[in-house]
Image 1 (cartoon, rainbow, N blue to C red):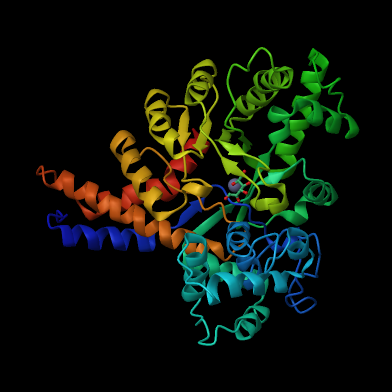
Image 2: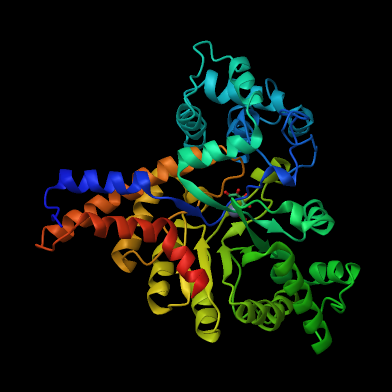
Amino acid sequence: MAKLKKRSDIEKAVGKALRKQPIVDMHTHLYPPCFGTPVPHRAGKGGSATDPAGLFLWGLDELLTYHYLVAEVFRVVPAAGEGGMSYEQFWSLPKTAQADHIWKNLFVDRTPVSEACRGVLTSLDLLGLEVPKNKDLAKLRKWFAQQDPSKYIDKVMEISHVESITMTNEVFSDNERARWLKDPEKLRDPRFEAVLRIDPILCNWPAAAQKLNEWGYDAGDGKNLSDRNVDEARRFLAEWIDRQKAIYVALSLPPSFSYPAPEHDPVAQAGQVALEKVILPVCAERNLPFAMMIGSRRGVNPSLRDAADMGGLSDVSSVARLCNAFPQNKFFCTMLARENQHELAVAARKFGNLMIFGCWWFLNNPCLIEEITRMRFELLGTSMIPQHSDCRVLDQLLYKWEHSRAIIGKVLVDKYADVVATGWPLATHDIDADVNRLFRKNFRDFLAR
Ligand code: FIX
Ligand code: ZN
């Protein structure tokens, strides 16, 4: 097998490997059409019937009203005062009018240089669609309205090279829960895998316990967990893992999350009991990883709804203590603060049961993906999962993976060039194997371990 010596040959081999590598996207908020289509695309014509609370989001208007762009439009059109648009006014508009407002203010009146704006343009470009000279959306809307939703999913997955989409299935969302209770078999789509999302169990046990009691599990008073309450909460988790066929269990946590929980905080104390006696034992028994996404400060500006949150510095030592105290458990972890990334990568060097993943949310920007990926390669080699998409709208798979793939490829080329400079023999199949690890195998192996 020929060895690669010149940088240009390495670049070609990395480019080729990336172009043919199928991706398993380990964290998204995407759903297939069987979870309901909120817009009347092809209703009654082979497409799913319209369902206002449906969870399958796709197409131009969803792309333009992504919460990243909602936050950006309120920076340039103030929520109060002359020439502004209040939050209430914005949210009362139909989706197409919200999209028109965002399009006008972020794409027509200004140059769309932010990553979220650029993302819309990349997605349209990859679909072969031209942004009309007069920037009128009518033609584009017509094109999207002609798509068959299920075939369109195939098309987006093919262009983005995504072979499997991992959902986030929120059992504490009434909307989603009702769908699962109705007929779980009707919610299976081989292109999508489920993840049981359980934030309130750890973050707000009193509220979670109240819900569990309403749903027929004896979860107790929300303060203390008796043996019976623990058994019942375990039963709840196990039943939902089965119902969803979940491949892991996940939640997001505020920057203040600490393990052990602070003594003066009874809610955090109860959460810790739920973690130690319910979540981790069930995950261990089922051999499912527990994913912690740490650092989201929720509802900083509630009027922005999904765009209301920001981030903060988290405590990596708590993650290390959990990995140490529960060696029989497997942990996925990502953190939202740039300042946490180095310490988290160092923690992953200490614990084989910790798999770090992705450049989450406000880190999913080219300059930060590059910095974080480079640092991870240097500390962990290829034993990590460099990216997930966090898409909420199907078509975002196109841009999120296109942008990340290019950056990960660029960093890989640098790392290979450094190794080759020492005389190390590097072959194309080594590159193919590494790329496979990064985009698919590390995730699958960790699940199977
Ligand atoms: O908690 C999460 O999974 C976050 O990724 C989301 O809640 C967040 O709103 C998001 O879309 C980030 O990209
Ligand atoms: Zn997410």
